[in-house]
Amino acid sequence: HLLSHFDDSLVESALLQLFRCIQLHAFINEKIFAAAANALSVLPASLWQYISTTNSNVTACGLATFFSFLESPQRKAASSYQANVERLAKSFILIANKRDFCQMFLLRESLPFSIDFLYQWLISCDVQSSTLEQVVDAVTSQEVEHVIDVSDIQIFLSRTAQHNQLVQQLVQQDESMQSVTSDDEDEL
Image: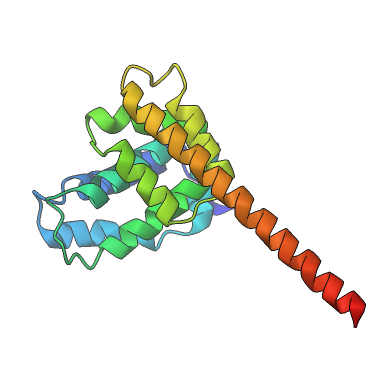
């Protein structure tokens, strides 16, 4: 694996500088922002997988950066790079764990995004229940209780519970449809 030959701190530093270009999108030349977004979007998934196994905050910083950008009112409405940032956010969501989500919430003070935006984005991307559980574990952890409002926690918990109930209902409907279909086939 090529990544094992690089100093993790250099890779981390380079990625954090690219994230910084996304964070400063409203203040820097669009070509710089575009170059950073393009550079990040063409990096292989194996890099993100590798980074997620290190004890760095790269995944958390990436998530906070992407959600802050996606929710930003200063973001150019027709930004052709929004799709790249959305794809990156989806990739990072898939590799993130409770620790990453906790760090992401702690970064909200410097990279603001709303809990409601995060939740709506997660649902619209149809993330797995296990990912939602990781986020719920982070939201309810003592590590972040001082940076998240109780009302936001309650909203996230209730909406996640509703989502899980809906998923269960759909699974049960699917199972009953399969049962009816197999019964019909048996009768033939």
